[in-house]
Figure (cartoon, rainbow, N blue to C red):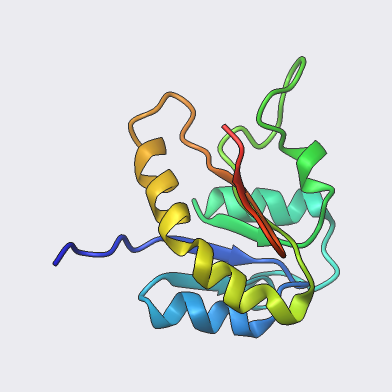
Length: 132
């Protein structure tokens, strides 16, 4: 039996605790935003803390698409920020991330040998999308 990767996730304040439970149950390290910085911290601080902790940011906030895009023009901040963005209703979040776990783990492992080590994944109600 293959050993499961142990990833580190940083959950934004808007992500339900049920997502943290799913990730922890399979052995991943989870840090909740409220454990580290104030709940109403600006997106730039959330991104900086996640990046400094070398964690995958999990959020519902669509602003991270523009704050840390895969491809950008000019000087980019947060060039090492990996993220998982939810595009489904909050009650679905735990079951949707559970369905996406093998893809997230695969993308993380593949990114470690790539030049750009970030992963960007969107999880909707009926889709799971990797942005490369």
